[in-house]
Image (cartoon, rainbow, N blue to C red; front, side, top):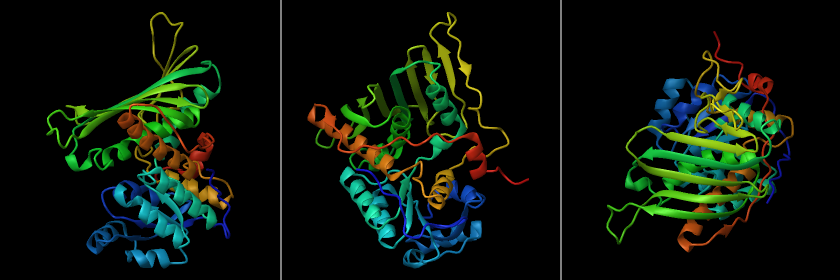
Length: 369
């Protein structure tokens, strides 16, 4: 399924945006949304009026009811920062209200819902896009350029691994919250590097301390086979004693190893190591380390890129097609693990175009002095 991004009216910059959801994630977005020149934050809303009022007071943005925000004809893009389990319904409501939509990950929690959202957006001649936008940062884009220029040779395989500490049972895979929260970072990165995934196999690890009648999955591992011929392993595990995220995203090529930065981070540098180096030295990729005088958290950059894309009649880089494909991969991994066999995906996507340093600087000139 391919998303149609042609709009009936288009938008002018700065795009007027409205936030749906004033929880913890809104505080990661708003400091950036308020300073990016392509955006104007018109309103914030939440089903909890007190939460919206608190965010309104902190950031100086009007708080309105959810229905009022969706009914406002001046708002171009609805930014969905609600909890994961509400994403599909909120995205659907925003599209039905005639808004372009940028959704926090994941777009939905089933591929059927995600595909329905793409169909609805196309029918209404609207665009839908989704996080993560960390892949627009210097670290990932510099690593991707290193792979695209061909000096490392053809990519052969990849390893993506994430270790995190235990999470509350309410966030385990029984309702998919933990998996749909973290898997999009790693899967989106892999799809951006290698293209769409054709088939997956999977395995679920269950918490051995839980009663047998109510087992809880605390890890998923799988093998991803891409249309391009690359094969990658993926391991996401919530058994670590270390509270912070431990990320690995390594690409093995004919001539070396590309070590990408944490896909859940804008600022970490990327490295490469050539097979021919007998000492096995890692070299930092020039341009991958985010400058120290720039904000380390740039969440919201994808909203600005979407606004600029719509103003210029092109597909946002964090496209709905990519977000839908990621949901398909997650659901297929779980289904493959439960069935004990590989599962073919029902969706596809086109990897986004690279983002140049000049484009990023235009989207984000930096923090005003």
